Image (cartoon, rainbow, N blue to C red; front, side, top):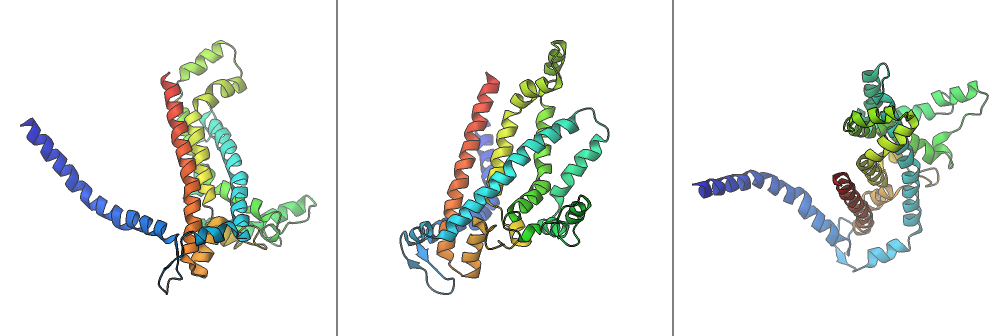
Length: 295
């Protein structure tokens, strides 16, 4: 009787999985396999794909625009990830402490994350305007010459990065707040008895015990920054003079503007491998930190 029930439950589980499995195969697995296969072909959408073996990769590694786009992507990672990691950690500690208006602060920092990318970019684009933007007016009050942020080759990438940090930091703050709730208060009570200062408690209790959250925040933000596209496309269009063109934008241009689908797919495949490495690193670090907690 027990064996019959187990078989019936297993059959029911398979039946429930079938609709999801079919959708997963049709919209995820089959397109993924076809996209990997396409890296070995030259295809302009309208004609018949032509097999060229590793021709797309040979062309990619000799393409100067590919390398410059890859460097711009890495530059955005450098500009975005450290500020998000540092600020979200410190703001979460501040909000988690005994401050007034705690609920308002949580909502205020998370609210930007709920906005659409077009709203965020158009709002910050107006603020960056050197003639009537808020930032330019503040600079004039201090006797400084306004900067044409989005048209200046030096300041365009930092301006887009500031917008990205403001937009996405709320999600990381929520992660840190969840982590802070898991730290037993007895640790802090023992530290108080030993006369530890607030800074010592943060350095020797809070920071080490949030190791898994640190890994999660850093790796997810690196992966997200490697895919940066919308902010750049809306705010600068890759300019000025291609100084903010990222790899995702170059893939988009090659695939949907010049219809070089095979070449675009080869670059996307390389980007996928890079993100896969970071995802694997995250998994290994999370497992390692979990083992340390058990010890």
